[in-house]
Amino acid sequence: MNSGENPEVPVLLVDDEPAVLSSMAKVLKSAGVDNLLTCSDSREVLPLMEKQEVEVVLLDISMPHITGDELLRKIHELYPHIPVIIVTASEDIDMAVGCMKEGAFDYMIKAVEPNRLTSGVGRAIDMRRLSRRYNSLREGLLADKISHPEVYRSIVTRNHRIHAIFRFIESIAPTAETVLITGETGTGKELFAEAIHAASARRGPLVKVNSAGLDDNVFADSLFGHTKGAYTGADSDRKGLVQQANLGTLFLDEIGDLSAASQIKLLRLLESREYYPLGSDLPRTTSARFIIATHRLLPALVAEEHFRRDLYYRLQTYEIRIPPLREHGDDLPLLIDHFHGQAVEQLGRKKLAVPPELLTLLETYDFPGNVRELRSMIFNAVSRQREKMLSLQPFREAMGYTGELNLPAAVETFSFPEKLPTLKGITERLIEEALSRSKGNQAIAAGLLGITPQALSKRLKRRKGGNSD
Image (cartoon, rainbow, N blue to C red):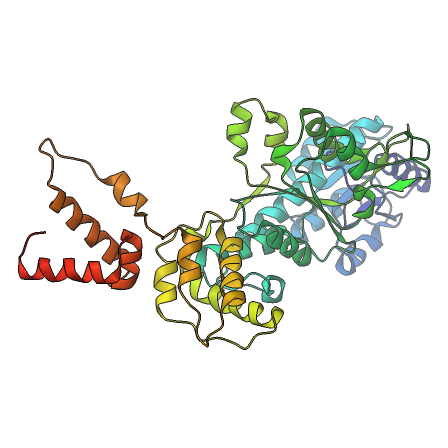
């Protein structure tokens, strides 16, 4: 089967000959379609479908009571989204054409080759899944609200872009497709993986593994496990993480660091859902859902031939990019309060007053370490604080505002005219930029410029008075 997994909704087989039903069921089960319903009385088909959702219907034409073509018309009228495959002994071309016009998904002659039967059913199942996926995505992305906010309680945000990601997660969570999460270090990719798993309501656990630094042998042993005697020191069988995550989710972080050999193993696992424990010749299958994450730019790695192109394409079904903190600065007030609360609780301190200038100061910073860096800053500041109010000094030190101008955007966009500006002119521009970024706060602007607040105040007074430096 193309999908590599059993349909969650059963396939319905309808034929008045029990031997035919048994034969078709055997062929489909051998291809991995185990969830089957059989019906030998055509009068029971519609009542059954009223009570039980079905994925695909395989329908005989020549049956007593209600003929297959009559049932086809009824099913297509009542359940137009369900593919119906006609399986009949008749080789009448006109009948085949008529059935297709009535809405049949496919038409097969009995004693059909097993591959023809399984491929036809597989295509019908894939079509249903694609249709459900499209409808789910469409409804989720158009919705204005999040259906299950409790799933995202560990992600502190009010940002509209991240809320759009939440809605996307709710749309794709019920599927078993692999999800690729990308984003800079410290953006919280693991938290989003946890949210996807929670939203999926899968029965198995969420199993996590960091791929960074794992050589090929350790990677294979960690994921696939080994049998007793597979190598020196393998004194007993060991379950791999793939087996532990069965019916659940396997989260593979930092896959941009995988070796070429490990990338091949991962690609085979994602495509076939089969793997071999070390030392075993018998393949095992998994129904785990895979969530893959990396902070590295995979297209660049592909271009440099450090990452397999086919694996990258395989991972692109669903990709979620977590924005860096500098792109959702509106979350800073929430995050400051959240991490401040965590810090005082974990460090056993009383809650401190937060100076209003802290937010203005943090808004001037790009946060290369993202949310993780902000958390570390706040924990460090709380641990060092002995007064009742948080000091800005630990934050200034962490941000590097200790004597050098840190205005990268202003410098990068500044272009000199043919006639060079004066030092006074450049100084004025830098002061204006610093005041703009600090929202008029002279103490913070002075820190950005690497001078004391008193020195900045003198310069502003001179400028106001029209005096030169």
